[in-house]
Amino acid sequence: MKLQITSEPGHLDALAVIVFEQNEQHTEPVPPEVVAQGEWLGDLRASGEFTGKLYETAILHRPQSLSAKRLVLIGGGKAEKFGTAEARRIAGVLVRTLKSKGVKKIGLSLFNGMNTAASVQALAEGAVAGTWEAGKYKSEQKADSNKELEEFLLVGGGASHLATSLENGRIIAEAQNFARDLINEPGNRLTPAVLAQHARDVASAYKLESEILDAAAMKDLNMGALLGVAQGSANPPFLIVLKYRPENPVAPDHLALVGKGVTFDTGGVSIKSADGMEKMKYDMAGAGAVLGAMRAIAQLKPRIAVTAYIPTVENAVGGNAQRPGDIVITMSGKTVEVINTDAEGRLILADAVTYAKRDGVTHIVDAATLTGAIGVALGHHNAGAFTNNEEFLGKLFAASRVAGEKMWQLPMDEEYKDYLKSVFADLPNVGGRYGGSITAAWFIREFADPTPWIHLDIASTAWLDDGRPWLAKGPSGVALRTFVELAASWKS
Image (cartoon, rainbow, N blue to C red; front, side, top):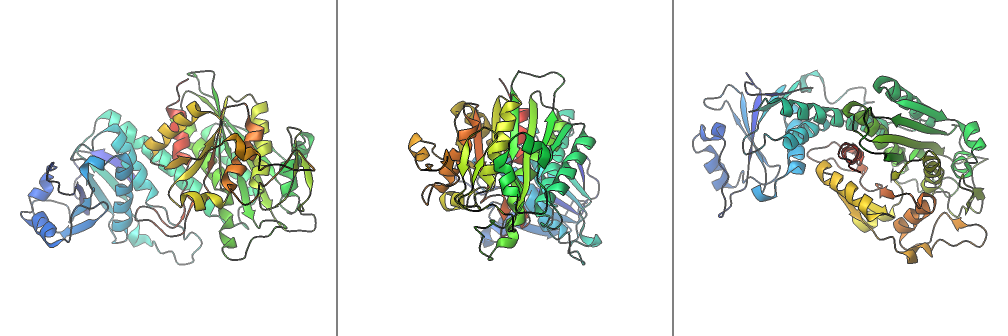
């Protein structure tokens, strides 16, 4: 899909304008395209057919005084609550609503203060993300050639700084869709070796340094936790390392992005229920977000060094599979009693985090579909955030707000560490029934300290069981935009 910002859109299949809810204290001006239609908006409001509620739409065919074939009203909700997060979603709603009607060329008016750099970038991100569909392997694609959107134009501006914002938005959203493609791949098509090849391809295309450690290399490094998870599968494990180095770094800081890359998770010997297991292809959503973020970072060129670490394995059931009660020796030298083989993500992250620290990184943030407990705590709208450094978390939260990705901090009090006790090893890989997402985070922290570190548990936000008006059902790509913004806005 072509993106463009222009003051002269030419003939459009649809011109969209954002209209807010009416407010007695404050009334937003009505776009001139709507004023030209006489009492149309007033009649819609009076009948309740269109009130300006967020994401609500109304379509007028063959509008007066316009060359566009359709005039589309899309609700912006309450004007005082409208921001870039809503703008991003509105663009996605427009794309998903109108492409299903065979519309090829959409224009969105930048009326009502939308011609800012932040708004333009958000609109570009939402529009491109809205084009993604999950049905790649359908023999008869839903989106046939008559329903492919060709152009999305922002109408009413053309300054060079807005063109840059538009391009930045395109880069980020295309990286998000790339990550969603990876996460959507079934386990028989995306093995650890295939994920490693995708990483090599990204490194080659976007001029990143790459290092792929195989099982032999990891054995030499004593990565017993990672290798223990992998030993039940015929598909060998890898540790993927991608490095971005800026020409003029802003600081000596070095950011590590660590992504859990379990390409399929059966649970191992502690096998999962069959109900919903097919979705466990998404257990590498953290890896997908990190790999996509590196693709965008390489193009946007922030002034901080960033290295990605992606431990990738398949957690399978086999004759050589890891057993409950096994004790593994991690790269750090700490020993772990494996109580539950389905708590495998924290094991592979432990060795990856240790390796990142050995590389001399100054800050670590990991993303992992780690626990079902995070969904119980926060539902499907916020990722869980855990840290050993409040200042670092403040930077990440500032980035997440710009990126429009919701995250919520959970406690890391010392008392929770007491749940992780083992008679037979330094620590167990699970801490019991209570506070499951917190004890999982504490497990990783045991390997991250004292380096400033953040853990994002994205298990309940990385996959949409039901599509949203602005995003298709399936992988969301969550955390990717936050990672990119964190790097882009980094100040020492």
